[in-house]
Amino acid sequence: MGDVKKASDGQAMKSAAEHQDSPEFKGLEARHVAGLTTEARESESAALDRVDQNLDHKVLDHLEIRYGDYIPQERLAAERHQFAQIQGKPELQQDLATKFPELSPPERDAILGYCAGDERHIERNTQTPSTLLHERLHGVSHPEARKILGNHLYEGITEDLATQHPEFHLKLQNTPECYSENRETVTLLKARVPEGAFYEAYFKGDDSRIKGFVDHDLGEGSWSRVKELLAQAEGGNREALHEAQKILKQDRWGS
Image (cartoon, rainbow, N blue to C red; front, top):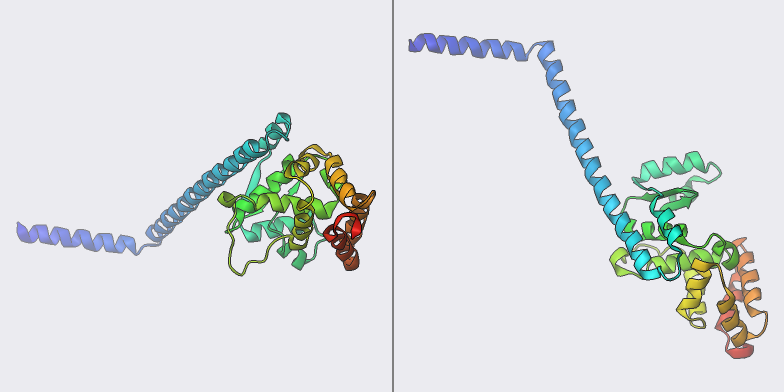
């Protein structure tokens, strides 16, 4: 009985081995492995989506708590309905190449995220939280803020606000700062203007208090002159940037 059993077991093992060598079995096995791999990928993707959504909700909640007195509730509500897509670098670069073909490869490579219309795209990396905060700030800023402040100050203030909060910003070694020159100008302006005046310009589209403080300190027309020079700087005029910053460094009445 035992030998029969052994013979039977041996035959069964032989049959199974022959079956495993068959093309049909190998094809089934390959499909099974592929299915498990796909399932793992889908599981990982779902987990990343949950992390991304959780981070996005925290960023929007933070903006509402911190700047809710300056941002209309309807604008905050509208921003919450805009989906922020966090992507790997290859996906973001491909997206940029498709939507902004005028950009050169080095220009695209320098982009960590963008806000355009109802789209928010962010590269997934160690800087994702602060990049997401930067793009969400664009979304809740006043529609006329860029025009009123000029692009140089608008981007400088956006990045300055985005990096003020340690819970969303990591200072990484050997990582260049974004908009460093813009933020330098903002720092000079902050020495003359209270924080609330910046919020009114950025979130309410009203730069009258900034103008009042700058013109009071540096003479009538100084704010308009600074903005004019910074607009020239955006066109590549380095001397205009230096001149604008020089004006902001002056003591009262240019002394």
